Length: 146
Ligand SMILES: [Zn+2]
Image (cartoon, rainbow, N blue to C red; front, side, top):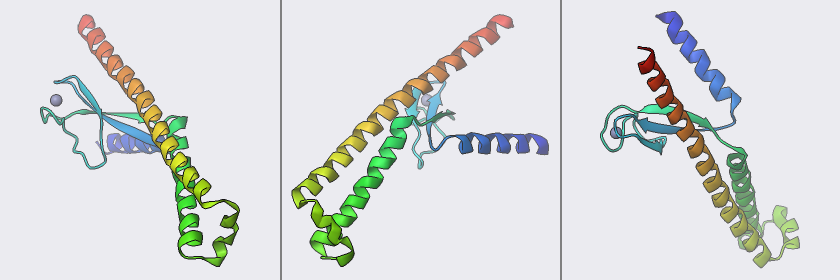
């Protein structure tokens, strides 16, 4: 019993270590419902409250792009506030970028981040759907064997 728990734990950490980030999906076999599982959500189906199968999908390159764009937007917002609101000396180099251009850049980063997040979500959802279909195929194969 202890060995099993250990094997599961090491498998899990390997899986988490390989991908820079992953999305968890909740698949309910009773409702045939697949949806992303939020960090605050319980392990149960939102419709019938039965326990759902957790499907882990690694984020795509668009997921990474989303984080990078968010980071750039945060840096730009901090520099913008420091220079234009608080006249901080350390941010004086920011005067090279006119204020309206800086604002357009900030909004562009946020909009591009949203687009990246949307593409990432649609791609990971498609992969999760494939994994669900694989579960169905395995079950059907199992039934035929019996
Ligand atoms: Zn359900």
